[in-house]
Image (cartoon, rainbow, N blue to C red; front, side, top):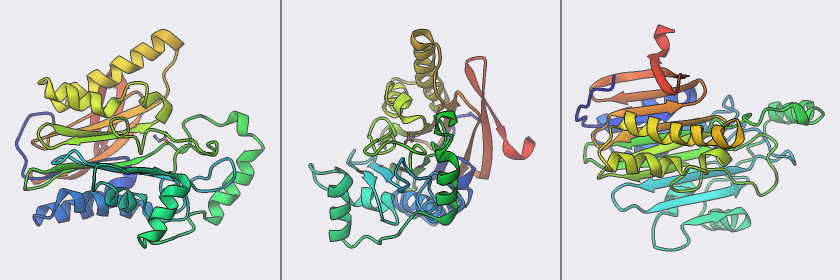
Length: 306
Ligand code: GLY
């Protein structure tokens, strides 16, 4: 699974919820479409599905029962990135983030400013709060103290390499369930939630944003690849280094998972919880995998083998 091969195209995405998006992205890439298009379409598929409660439509609400979204995009050819944080009432944060990557300033917009930008540029609006999530909010509000900090952290991240050897990264999330007004996690923060460099590879993170940002996981993984490590070695090194530091200093580490794609399309994955992901390339049919932490390293199996 970790042999190093030069793929024509490859796509790697977080969580089982990316299965259909990964199929869409694979089709685009196999027909010589661009990595950017594969990432946008793959993520949009998840943003539009109300059955996934951590992204877009049907996402879990914040402390005021509002669905507040974050998203980020990075182009590995130019290193340009775009991102939106704490945005409400729009269909696709990834598309808005993507549009912000042009130019050398104003690439990361949050809150009202991001919403005004999206409105001005004609991005589709949508009320992302579903009846199901209002009911969940009402039910959980009473027992908020018992909620696990991980609830609602399943960010969708896509990394893609196309047949032109361009690599890019995209992310989208509704963030932490019952998060405070104004809270941002790692998802829209370049270097933390995502990073892409077509000369080296890309990485993206899911899990507790506050934890991921303590180690700049995505940039760290790409740096380790730049230093010569494989995608898998880089993923393991950066995540477990941070995990171990946090355990040593605080006695625990919150959930973190990392996906890494090298410039040739080989993947690496690391996690300190059970984590699912999807991967496809011109040489590997689309597959869902389960990653588990075992004694300070990550064991990966095909979901069909479980
Ligand atoms: N990783 C998503 C968040 O913490 O908001």
